[in-house]
Amino acid sequence: MKIANSLKTLRSRDKDCKLVRRKGRMYVINKKKPRYKARQG
Image (cartoon, rainbow, N blue to C red; front, side, top):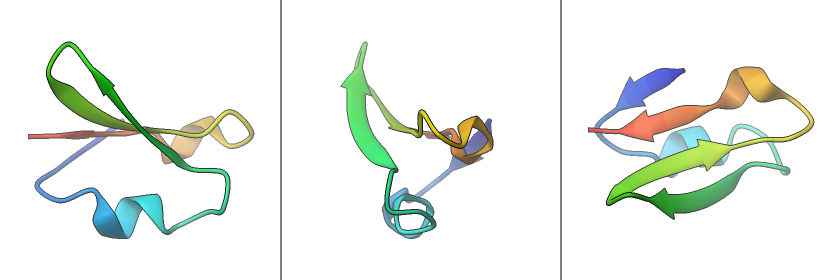
């Protein structure tokens, strides 16, 4: 999982990426390609 300051560019890596908020943190998740996971901060 990548830790990034901004998720905007990481979200645009693949069309299946979704932005999700969990426990006050922003996550990028991708069910089809799990290696695209990312977290903010």
